[in-house]
Length: 85
Image 1: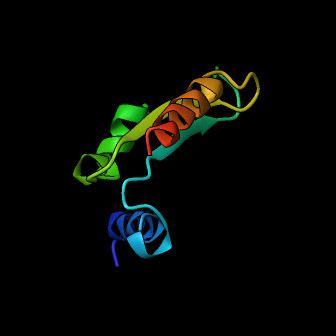
Image 2: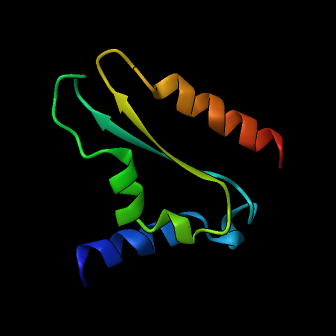
């Protein structure tokens, strides 16, 4: 099975309506260890994961583990989305 297809199947398993709300949001944190490390931009990650095919709110957001840059924004977004359920 191609890697992208396997990733897509994993996403579908995570959002299976049998396991929770069918409208729950999806947050993908595109994380690198430090801000100076080359990264794949979150726009490309969301495209590769076919997130635009999801029938629910989703966000792919760049973050870095060292400073937590971008992490809080992602958490804030998902908390706002969960509040709408």
